[in-house]
Image (cartoon, rainbow, N blue to C red; front, top):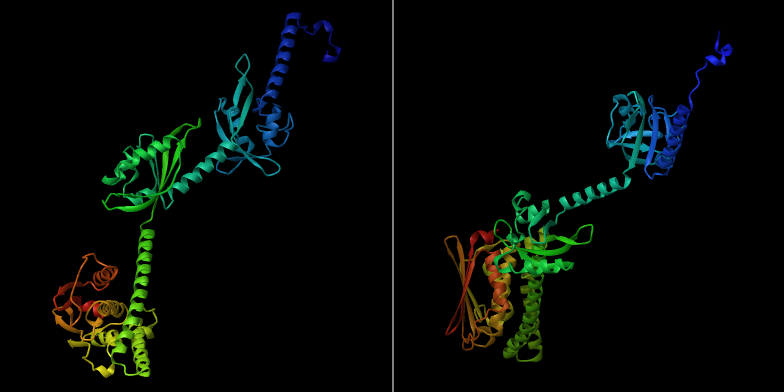
Amino acid sequence: MDSLTKNPADVPVKDSSQLYRDLCLDEAMLKGNDILSALPAAVYTTDASGLITFYNPAAVELWGIEPVLGDSTFCGSWKLYWADGRPMRHDECPMALALKERRAIKGAEAVAERPDGTRVPFLAYPTPLFDSDGSLSGAVNTLVDITSRKSNEEAAQRLAAIIEFSDDAILATDLEGTITNWNRGAERLFGYTTGEVVGRPVTMLLPPDRQDEEPAILARIRRGEHIEHYETVRQPRDGSLVDISLTVSPVKNAAGTVVGMSKIARDITDRRRAQDQQRLLLSEMNHRVKNLLVLASSVVSLSARSAKSVTELASDVRERLVALARAHQLTLPRTSDLALQAEQATTLHALIQTITSPFVLPAEGADARVRVSGSDVPVAAGGPVTSIALLLHEFVTNAAKYGALSTPEGRVDINSSEEGDQVVLTWTESGGPAVDRGDDAEGFGGVLARATVKGQLEGTISREWRPNGLFIRLSVTRRRLKA
């Protein structure tokens, strides 16, 4: 007899208690589904074969698509990828692995791609479900969207890379001034590796005379203040001193409490050097302008002594001003133009005569005011000519303002000699006003002369105020004159 002709009496009938238990189980499942639907986290379930049997609205939002119950398997997403971006088959996803290995998986990372192309990184927590006899009945999976966390991680990684590879020195300390972080820029600037400084006091970078700076900085940081572009000096590992611009900011925790400070130190040595050079050039320009005005006045006075008419005076002044311009031109740095440099090459005697010619008219005789004697050595084009010309221009200017050339009877004797590898030039004034050295403070002209001799000519210079006039001894290596 087939099932269609069975006797109803032969069909097993559930008792009332079993029916009640089944009804309670169905009601519990319905309530459970209602609870899962209300959860903000993405949740779905499958049967033992991986067919999706339930999903909540949060899962649909994460996937960007609604799966087909009883047809979609393992995961409701449109496409899946591994965390490194490789495509992932649905039967390789964390849910498939949990069903295959019959074990829970905690926090497996994957990426779901929505139909619109948006990719959502997530963590999966699939857990197998077993019935009362231990048989696998299905699984439940919770998906956690980690888009924000990933964005924060990427931002943190970018920030860390910027800090690590910044040219500026960036370091952090706690509120006791102990170093906690140290980038490569700090290694380059201060000469210490990260391992050598982390855990040590930041005062190790302060020169002895600046140790009181750090307590003041810490006090301001504890108050939440920001210190910007504070120029100071720090001491690297080699013991030298380096000029830096320092920016200090408080570091706060999630509650807004100051827990440390970050420092950005920028080496401003080159900037300071450029500023000093600029100040020197401005001072030199000011010094030269004043000298030229005095020299122009001296030229008129010198010419007026011997001129017999206005025409003769004008002619003398014109000749001396032309000679002065020619001499002044030699004190200016040349360009790299080879023709100009070739023109600039000369001998020491020719250079002296060019610089002093504004104070000696041909009619007065070659030795009337300035006499040149001794060895005549070549002076190379470029730097040597400019440097020697600048020194001679300073000597003759001072002689015209204060020394032997400021009186009709005064004269200057200039002698050059060779002593080993040195070329020695002596400048001897006589017949000038009484020598009154007065204040021993060195003027700008003296500073400029000393800097030129030492820095550019690798030589020495000395002055002696004798009763009959100033005596100068200038010694320069022959190699520098020929360079």
